Length: 331
Image 1 (tube, helix red, strand yellow):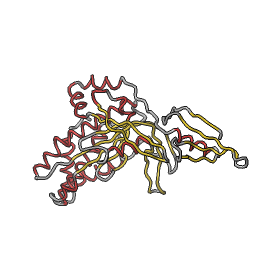
Image 2: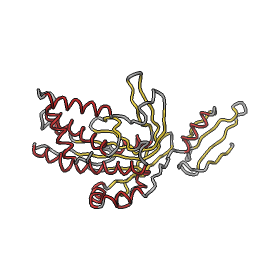
Image 3: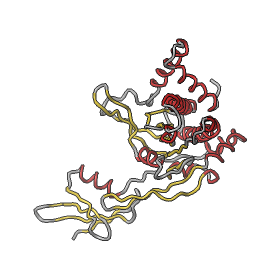
Image 4: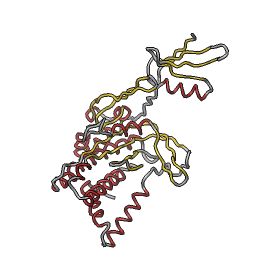
């Protein structure tokens, strides 16, 4: 099927949204058929067979699209017109992801979560598709949707994207027939966080370090780190802004060269788990009594070796990276 531009996707979706609820039987049947088709494509085909509690491991780019500005629109447009625009924009976003071989996992309020990566595609191809989809959506909403809204005399909507590549643990979560296949990973939660207004401004696409390492320097720029403290240990993640406009322009002018440049680069998931939390989990599972002591200047793990003899070990690491070297002492 030939690629459709965003104007075609949005316009056809908007027309279908307007016909739903009226007596145009043929258009209504078409709209219902599309609804069923889209609903059937929510989730990931490689993992839909998982039962509740079962898991499977894979890699992919987790993508979150956040759509902003509907609150202001609600003061300007009628509820019906607001519904038509929201439905058309959501449908166009879903079709955009599917068009570039992504998988829409769920709707997230005013936005969607998708994963690019499956058994049919190399990781590099999936990552390229995620970048292409980001540029396609951002430019499409700016060029086609917002001019329509300005015609109504309303303020334009705004979007932001969060993405990261990494190892993913897929599992079906829920109860009986009320369940859903979900991607559990640091990449998932980081990408979701990055798409929010507190981290990303309107029209920005923020990416984590694993995906950014693969993106050429001309299409990214450094951003403030994401920092947080857990169990007395400070964590940080390098972040980058994806220059989606430059990427889109280059991909349009020189599509073959642009694609070749990225697909020749090796995409590698960089685990960033803290050695403290990883060791805490492993030692606890092995039957040791362990706790993280944050009272000292340098956080450390206290491992109880023999309670009767009051024998313990102090475990520290030279850095907070996954490949940090451990050091043990016996007070």
